Image (cartoon, rainbow, N blue to C red):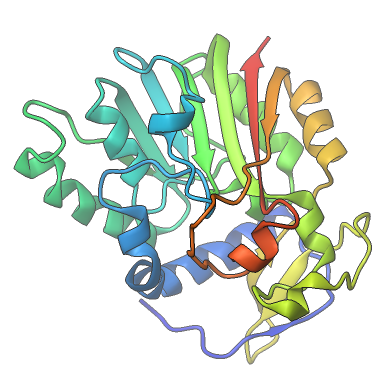
Length: 277
C-alpha cells in the first residue's frame, strides 16, 4: 500500500466526497499498522463493540441472529462478521478500504476456511462499498450493525442513516458504536492532559489531517448526542436504547484516547440501538 507520510491537523472543511477519498486513502495505507497494533484485541472471530471491551456475547444488542441476513457497515478485517456466521447468521460485510478488506479476506482464510468458526459455516461475503451509496437492494437485510466502522468518518451522516434504513426490512435492527460525542471536547490523549476541555461540545467542525501536499488524508466528523438521535429519527428509525459503557473494573487496556484514567470519569463510547419503522 502507498504510504501517506507525516500528516498535520488543519482547520478546513471536508464534504462527503473529500471525506470518503481521504479516509479510503488513510485506511488503505494504515491497515497493516492498525492490525499489528490492535489485531490481538479484536481477534479473528470475536465481536467487541468498543475499547471498553463490551462483547456482543454479553450485551446481545443485535438480538437473535441465527438464520438472519446481517450487514456489517465498515467491517475492517471483519472479526465481528465471522463471529456472527459461527452463530448461524449469513453476513455481508463491507468497507470503503481495500487494505482493510485484504485483512478481512486473510481472516476468513484463517478461520472460516479452516473450520475454526464451525464446520460448514459460510464466510462473510466481502464487498468494497461506501455507506452513503450501498450497492444492495431495498429491504434486503434483517439486521445491520457497525462497531466503530464508517459512521464517524462520513460527512453526510443523515444520508448514511437513510441508506441503512433503505436496505433494512421493516422492523430491522440497526446498532452502531461511535466515539462518545462528549469526547470531542477533550484532547485525544489517554493521560492527564486528556482530562482538560479544550473546545466546545457544539463545535461541529471536522477533524482533518493533511499530508505534505496539503491534501486531506484523514477526516473524522463530530455529532452531538442530539444530532445522532435526530438523524436516526429523520432517517426512518425508532430509537430503542443508547448505551454508554462504563469502564470495566480492573480492565487496564489502552486504545488511543481510551484509558482507565479517563474511562472512570466520563464515557468514551456511545452505542445506538434502533429499529426501522
